[in-house]
Amino acid sequence: MDNEPRTCVICGASTADKRRDAMYCSGRCRKKGQRTGVATRRAPAYAVQVMPAVVPKRQRKPSVNDIAHLVLDASSIEASFRFASTRADYRFRAMCTRMADAIGAALDQEGLR
Image 1 (tube, rainbow, N blue to C red):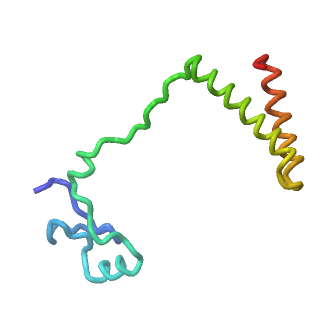
Image 2 (cartoon, rainbow, N blue to C red; image 1 turned 90 degrees about the vertical axis):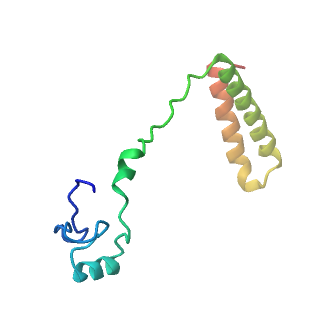
Image 3 (cartoon, helix red, strand yellow; image 1 turned 180 degrees about the vertical axis):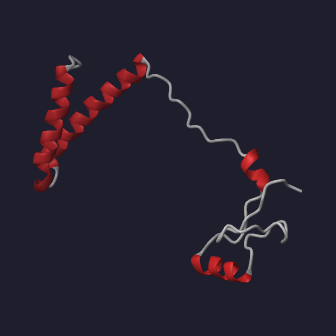
């Protein structure tokens, strides 16, 4: 038997004299729980202790190769926007030109072109 005190999920009253997996202290609380959508099964006590905490992995620092690939990708995207600025629907041509100009200016500013 587990030593943790068991309480009603609705009112907080003790359910120690009920079944080991009891969630409610009375029929009234059980009905209220069903009407409000409270969980119908309590998680086993060991589930909380056994499951490890999920910690996101740390990403590695970008290498010089990673940066070089990003610069090449940026140049390629700039070229795609330049192409789209002459061939896309008229509604999008101005936006494509602005995007290409912005990417080109950023590359020029950093001396990457």
